[in-house]
Amino acid sequence: MIEFQGLTKVYGGFQAVKPLSLTVRRGEVFGFLGPNGAGKTTTIRMMMGILMPSAGQVLIDGLDCHAEPAEVKRRVGYLPDTPIFYDYLRGREILQFVAEMHGFTRRDAAERGARLLAEFGLEEAGEDYAVNYSLGMKKRLGLACALIHDPSVLILDEPINGLDPRASREVQERLLAAAARGVTIFVSTHLLDMAEKLCDRVGIIHHGQLVATGTLDEIRAEASASGSLEDVFLKITDEAADEIAQ
Image (cartoon, rainbow, N blue to C red):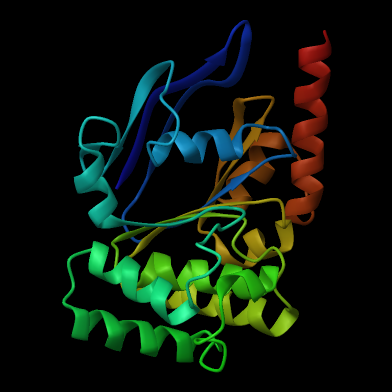
């Protein structure tokens, strides 16, 4: 469903993302893990057409993210790390606007928006301006915007940052339910306990390079490591850092 073909981003002499080749299957929850500054958000911004790759491409459902951006966005729901909204639109109005941009009638857009406000615990805040929303509320509103057109792919950058424990669990349960319906989920996070519970497979990126990919058991075997995903992650990234230093 998602295919990276030598995707690369270079700034001057600095390779922010080294040639990345990777396939994510339909209905899979794929965790994209790495330390801060590893290249996760840069990769996602290239997937969403926000940044132009220096080389390579990303295909989503067979469509080139840069050659056919409108068709790709019809299939994708995107949540950035820090959602940004028009400050003086109400939560209800933001969802209405996003749904209408996806081609729904005003009536259908209003119904979808009202349903998602209720599902994400924002019903009482629906008439509040976005400027008054907390980070956690903005995250929930952003995820509602990503889901409003029933996308077949979700691309999520740190989806539970800023959420309280109950909201975090509810979001994770919603993502698992979406995957069970066949939605493909590509999720970037540094919260390894969440990734261990949620993801079918993970990829670990470090200094712009994909250093491991597979199920947790496969990565354990490849790294000759045991323990939690956190233990394996730390071993792999430490070894990768040592190789770079040499």
